[in-house]
Image 1 (spheres, rainbow, N blue to C red):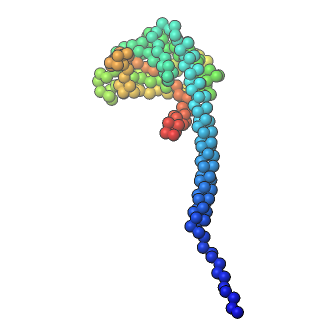
Image 2: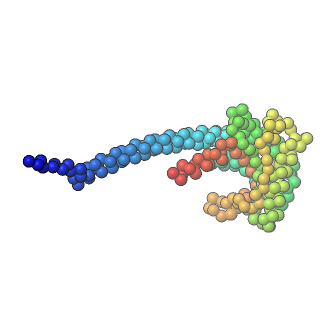
Image 3: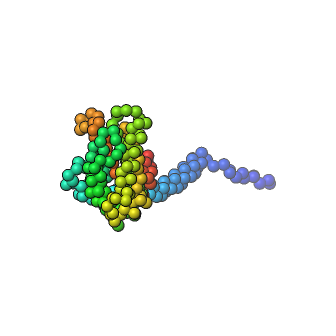
Length: 230
């Protein structure tokens, strides 16, 4: 008697197939979630590190601004310390006659009093390793052409440095060291100043500023852009 052949069914049922696919999907989803958590953890660490760098530089800048503000708060001359940047500005008529870049007698006297105090703060042991540059910057009002005012603003800024490093200028402890950091610049009428009500102030716009930049400023600007973008 011939035996009946038994056939094996190698095909999975539809339910079994769906179960297997769901298991594979769940496994892939778990892997993706774990990778995402790991990436987010690393991202968070990077953001925290960048914020620490920003805070460190901000603290140094704030300390310098506080020191400058304290030093010049009782000055007889109207000196303004920018609370955000630390830029020190004073009206051009302190140093020059109108439309001139030759320092007046009162201007030379002012620099003899101001400069040693300023560099004494900026280049003290606590801060000098953080300083990238010190800029003497000239500004004009809007009268006249851009080029004429550019030349005037540049000449005014340069005349300040000429006076500081002239033979007859009183010696101060940071005088030689300051040459490593200091430079001059002119901005013509491109950065005007306004009154409290927002109206243009020609007299305030005619000015000279002393600015400083920290070594980390450029890097921090890049970091802040990355933080803001993310």
